[in-house]
Length: 396
Image (cartoon, rainbow, N blue to C red; front, side, top):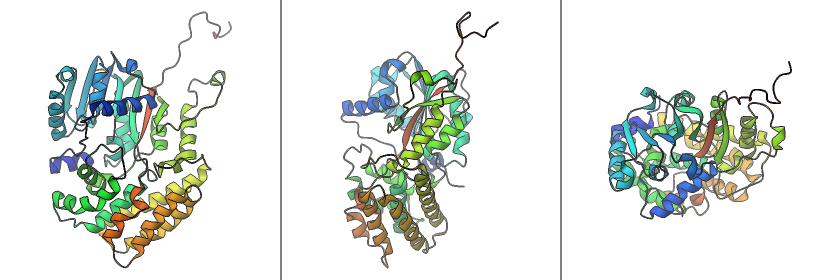
């Protein structure tokens, strides 16, 4: 079994999710924009009960606290994360009195009463648990009737560029090295790539630890379609970031109790999946079957990377190159820029030995990053009550 994110953090006594929030106004604006994408305006959270599961070191929690929920409970399983949250909020005395922090795993948590808002970022997508769907069901149990659940998802397409970088990183490091030795070796190689992300607020060394070294990052994923499927019995999708959901039905045509929102969200996912591969690109929706083929090929590539980390078989390089041929061919149909970037990496990996300098400076691949984690908001479904004597009453 792949080591979980939490186990990895605890073993190394780290919480590698630090952010640069020196420009606090910009940080809060980013979070407000994200919530708006998800259909959550500030007044919706004000005076409501909020549970945040896995807040890490609490940087994103600052914005939620400013919305003045009636209760704000943070459940963090990493003791180092709890320390960081306490330290961070001590610098915001006007907010520190509004939050409660509990050190514990959601698997072991049973709320006395359910919460109107439940936020769970990152943990479900990258927890390294063998059954992320089961963990999602546990998280969903904390949501009150008509409440809102916000989660993050990730799949083999949105994580493709990071998976390929991880493979190169694993070629460069020795599994027996210490964590700090691995970071020191990888930082100069990947800094030119990360520096192309002008909006990045996370520390480069933390990104490297979490995406290129952390064993949970190559474990099971929770794609959007699977999250919708797991929650379908009780929840409806109503927002996403990126905001790709489109529903052109006339409101009077939405007549079923369930509204088919999840079915439409799933169709939108498969029709737009290719746009998760490169954050710089936005292409028109395409045949979902072509995107399913892209998904399957990227999943095979990811499995090959995972296998290499288990057996360190040098033949994995050739297998990666072979799968990349298929990916490049599929991607060429909707993005010349993305396919050329992937082709550049394929050429570098095809050489007799890895040219680290060429990889670090790769003019095309260095700026290729996927859309990483996607956010989804759900509402817990309730059956509408019909007023006595209303026109919808059954005839006598």
